[in-house]
Image (spheres, rainbow, N blue to C red):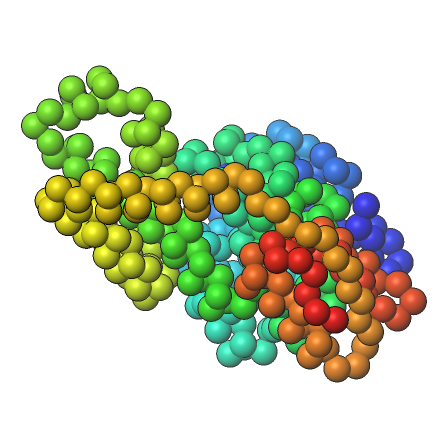
Length: 341
């Protein structure tokens, strides 16, 4: 169990929809003292049914906490961050779970909060929503992005330990800009494609016949189109620059596929799908190599920060973080072998 100096760590979750509710329930079942808060009164009542304290007042929910998870809608995160840091103790670590990191990270920099706020994004979820859809095991084995800053490395280390120990996720350290570029292609463009395919069927003269024959490829390809529309729109809008840039790349490849069809070029079509199949196979069978690194807890953090950010950008992740005897030690995994010491 993750502890703090002088006792057990105390947590709060602000916003208890699918992601926040899943975090809340996992903390609660793991024995971490946790409070919840949600702007919706009915959700607060539902939370209390799970045996979790749910004050009506946000300030009361975070007043004596060591770590707070911000899990509300993307547009609300900056203002909620200010409110939480106003009422929480000075040493309280704050993180969020938003699907874009650039804007909230810039807001934290602007308001001098980078020593205690660590932007985060657990890469897990379903098309369902609300506390009633929450699942304590949702994050097991999932990638959980955390964006460290040099002045916020103590807060980052605490969160890494918590995410690994309680949620059994894999921590991926990244800069906010790299995160937003990567998720544009890995998550946000797929939402556009799912919306495009489902939208084309919605307007088709053979809509009902399509739904009658739809099998696994259609269900898989349109699954995220079932995500609440406002949540998807907020995500795409908040990362629109990167989404449009990456969409241009996808559109170019679709154009090449269409050109191969129009030009009766079956060899080009086969070549495209062989390359696509290789990416799919790599996703399902990634061969990563473990390594260990240690850094001084105090002093110049440049080497530690550089190691962490390079690891995430290389497609790697952390599975251990321990602070002991003046040193912080990490176990990392990389697809191309250990990083040079």
